[in-house]
Length: 312
Image 1 (cartoon, rainbow, N blue to C red):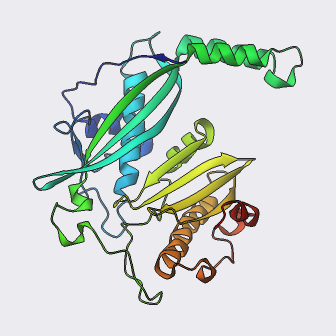
Image 2 (image 1 turned 120 degrees about the vertical axis):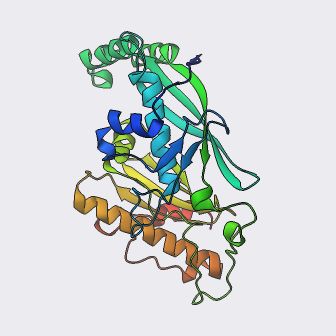
């Protein structure tokens, strides 16, 4: 079992907004956030859709900002704010629970993550041991013993992240807080962009982290009614968008390099999957959902065999 640890909370005079912009140049400036580091509701990170840095011509991705903040705070806690010799490496995190709570005129998103990592010393030792023996390619290398050693040196912690999402979710009691997603006629499609995840990766850095470090990543829509999941399976990505009642649309995607053309094509694919799931929701008939051309274009791979296994 991984060793359970705890870390001191970050306490800074400067705001997280200022510190993250200084430490992570890939952000391209300050995030549209205010407030604290998100350890509690009183210390919540406030995501501000109306911040001066937000381009009103671009759809606001509040959920994407949550996950960017989670990633950067984890790096701050486990690397940047730690002394030499006390830093961590091989860091991974997995969402365990997500809760939406309201209080007076505010809406809060509470995310609970399990984080695993290794001390820098242990990480380098394990890495050297694997690479020196070329891992599984070397018949003399005891991969089982290596994996047991790796598991024994892994550390684990549970972390909460609180976000004030009032600016893009709406105040409690607002008419648009609980939109009606049930529409009988497929032609009479309402705008439910807050209900469906239409864009997954926020920036190339987030994609590169998934490509190199994670096996699976999930994102919820602003309303929490849909969950998008991307995972690695048999040398491909499996992308699924699932509605709250279990209905889903998905496609296998070829692992792609983070170049501009691929990036634009993947974004288009996510939006197309959302469009197809919307049709499925509103017609309750999978035969009404387009299956061609593939949602992700030249990045797509065969999906039919996977569909058959889901007993739709």
